[in-house]
Image (cartoon, rainbow, N blue to C red; front, side, top):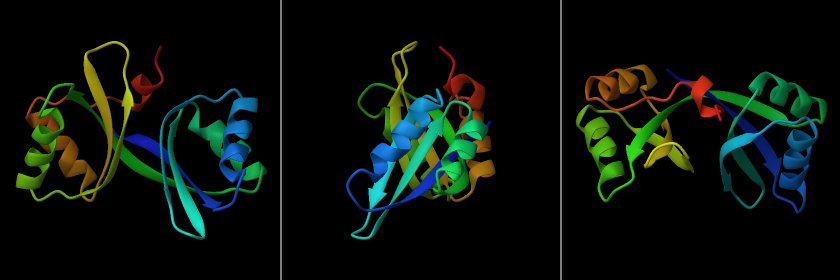
Length: 143
């Protein structure tokens, strides 16, 4: 029930992000969700991609430094308080959210939040026990 996220470490200079997107586009790899965090010297591009093995290979071939992290994709009601329900639940269970980002899902009236939890397996158990939908990696790229 976990998804694989690729993290690409980038020098903070013009055009470096575009090199990543061009590399993936040329390889026919779709980016489903992403987040970019930066400092004055470097950035971390976190992505959920379709065909992460191919993405890793083509990015490494171009000299990018990569990391891999397990994240959890959770369907969240697209209404006031939808995100709060998830955050209150994990907080009550002593689970910390290290970071999160979202993407649009076309099929339901919901948002998909990508979470990096400090206790990933416990978070999945708690969320499922409380009837939250965890989206498996295979469904993140389904059309």
